[in-house]
Length: 248
Image 1 (cartoon, rainbow, N blue to C red):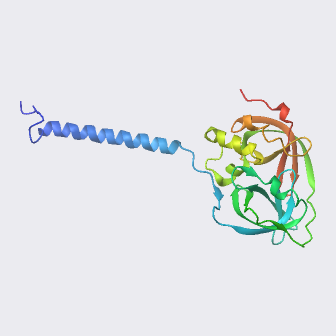
Image 2: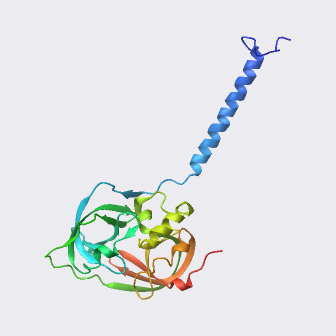
Image 3: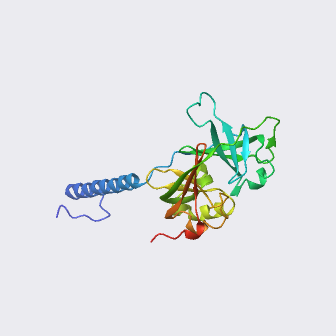
């Protein structure tokens, strides 16, 4: 009868107290083990950056097609490398920069903006009203090299969120946001599954794709046949949107 215990007694019997302690410790170990397993199973955040609030000046040549781009000379000795870097340009929010640069194609400009970058891909969100042409003679266009037909498997994402504005900026959790960004004129890119290579997607006429043509494929793993082009340090994948189909 010494182990008998009711709630109004001031203290539980020693044997019952030890039993309860063991149960509590066991439950604590189980909870900590499950928590550690869940944490270990989560993907780490991507090494992407959006320099929000850090507005800096830029100068370079505007390429309005296929997507608004600022071509910036690389400093230092680039005799054995590509001599320019290409920064995609976007407007604030879920909008492309087509209207901002429409009259500045091929011109040398100065602008202010915030950098967005990830894994070698760089973008600038242009500050409204900050862009203007200069009297500097622009650098000549880089040569476009056709590397032939390729088959690439990856995920179609909107470049602005993927490069750093959102984290995660890919996957099904980002599907609705990606669809809206692509519809707003944000340049689409295909990110390969194996190495994370980035390909800017363009049409067979080397022009930008219609804004809504990729919306239903956003955040979906897809295999695409296309023609690979390079311009400076940028890779472009020329595709026929009519040939796209959902993976099964």
